Image (cartoon, rainbow, N blue to C red; front, side):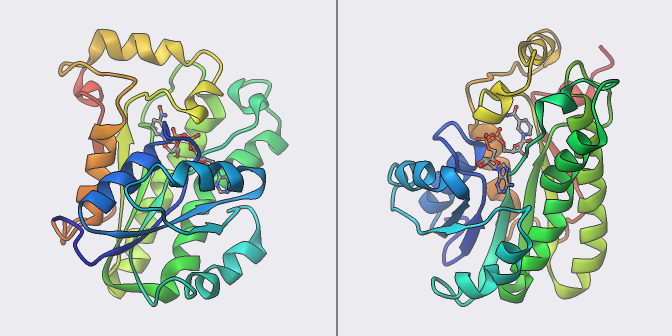
Length: 252
Ligand code: NAD
């Protein structure tokens, strides 16, 4: 079992379509203990969905835009565990205005950057007091090397997220903590459905993925997250692993 005796903090379980749900399920199947986070009105939904996992994990409140939640996270986690071996960041949000590049306001963009980019650093620092030597932080990105249709300021936020991953790798490496991202192809989740014109990504992946791509299958991305959370990438940090059917490597 890849994650035997490991304890993981997994953010981002909203529905059973959430990528994080599939990471949590696979992690439990691979021997890990899991603690979920959720926030506000979605707490109840996450608690219900958590019951669909092989064993029902505790759900701790965390809004990554709330500094009090972040400051008290380690203390509140201590009710469930003395240490963490890994953290999954599976959080993304941008107001609708951010999906129009020329019209998006700074307010829209600031929210997107705070919740979708800065939050990787905020979550890492909040969890650090419990993080064991050899620990692993994993996040999810959508390849930010390109200007995509409709992704707009969320694309800019993902570029900042990818850079944040590299700086975290620099600063957490000496503490024995790795930080890596999985760049997933499009998957039909709640976050994806909130992107106007998401079907354009589906068309691009249909045409360009040499391995093919199934927008209804979050498992390949979840498997990569579990692998990066395990001890099998001990010398890898600041990396982005593409789980996109090969689209990132194609010229057309
Ligand atoms: P999802 O809607 O299931 O998950 C997004 C999660 O972010 C939700 O659980 C939501 O509660 C959480 N969230 C939003 N604002 C938050 C806040 N302020 N504090 C704490 N949590 C907050 O969708 P998903 O597709 O599973 O998204 C997970 C990650 O995967 C995101 O970073 C997303 O950008 C990334 N990703 C998704 C795709 C895709 O096509 N679905 C592709 C590549 C990367």
